[in-house]
Amino acid sequence: MNEIANEFKSLRMPGMAQCWTSLIETRKTEGLSLYEGLQILLQAEKNQRKANRNARLILAARFRYQVTIEELNFDAARGLERGKTMQMASCQYIRQGVPIIITGATGAGKSWLGSALGYHACLMGYKLAYFNIQKLFETISLHRVEATLAKFFDKMANMDLLVIDDFGVKIMDGQQLLDFMELVGDRHGRKATIIMSQLAVSDWYDLMLSNTTVADAILDRIVHTAHRFELKGDTMRKPIG
Image (cartoon, rainbow, N blue to C red; front, side, top):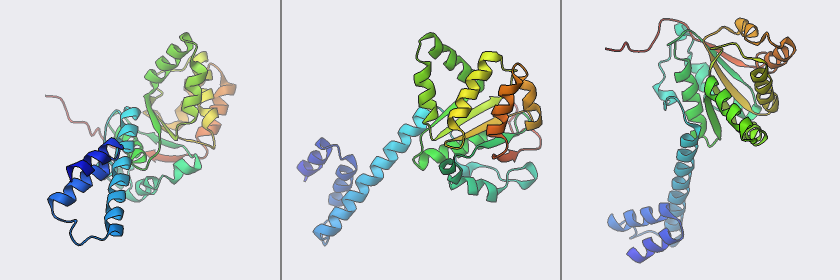
């Protein structure tokens, strides 16, 4: 019996190996037809591969927080409605390439919500990248120096979901604005983007005054079709000490 489990492992079928061992240990093989046994083993392998893929997607995303939608504290008064959030959990916005904008004061739960939506997307099998806006521009600068920027932009353009945190912490200079425009333009109407910001959307234009033409193009591609969460209330972060 161990030989069969080892054969499954050698064929890179760990789900089948583990399931087979469990069936033997619990005497569940007795009474199972060949068809029933194969169904159980194949489903176990399928489940294991899905779990492994999800784990890889979550690891690659490098979330600021690893939080599930079930851990969110829904409160309509704070701007976090259960019905609206669960609608986003269907991931229809990803399939349609529609942006999500999450705004609110420091500690209102923007990153928590954005991370939860992104984490759920990974569990649904979608490939994504998560960046703090400063880290995003640092990464772009590094790729520009290494002459690999085009490859990076292509990679970001093909992400099912791009999550950008702390948008608006500083005014974007001319090159940053052009780079951001390329990211947004590549994804417009095709791939979904989540943007979290302390600033109200009405103040975003002031971040881009170095090139108002580009600013108009960026806002046109993000704002008009986006689902919005405007979080309110006092900080939810626990005080230190």
